[in-house]
Length: 167
Image 1: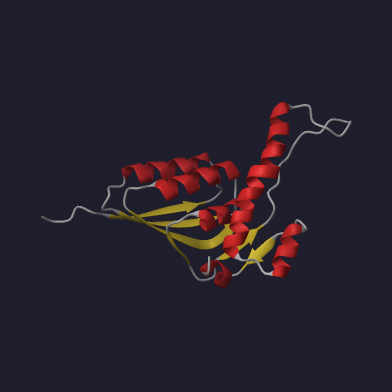
Image 2: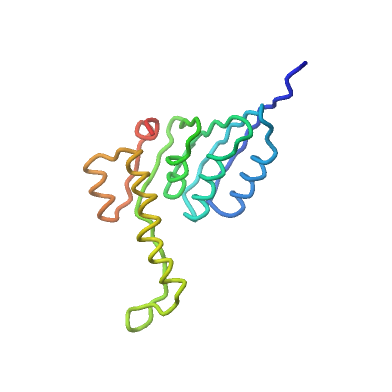
């Protein structure tokens, strides 16, 4: 009986947003157990909460086999996705990465505080949950002492193809 498996290619490019997540979910849902998919991924970052959802979808897509290929740029939340997925992955030549501390814009009143309870919750989340994700990412990347010092000072830290290849 001939094999019914198919090989698919998906290109995820651009900001990490709800549209990218929906495309990923729909592709995963359409896969059969025997299918293979290569996901080409290039992004300058985006929403961390959506990046976390993408990691969850990729790590729990029990349908088929996934090869995740970083290309061109893996910046910010995109590097989070690439680093924390547990599937076969590789990077194309000349791909670069960038890690930095997550930021959050909040409204501050004239006394220097925020009364908005949602923003207060987001500040707590950034300090606790997002920093936990960042620590996991840093452990997998194995930043040098110099890179870690730059990261801790709030600077962007750019990563080479060689560094990305070893994640």
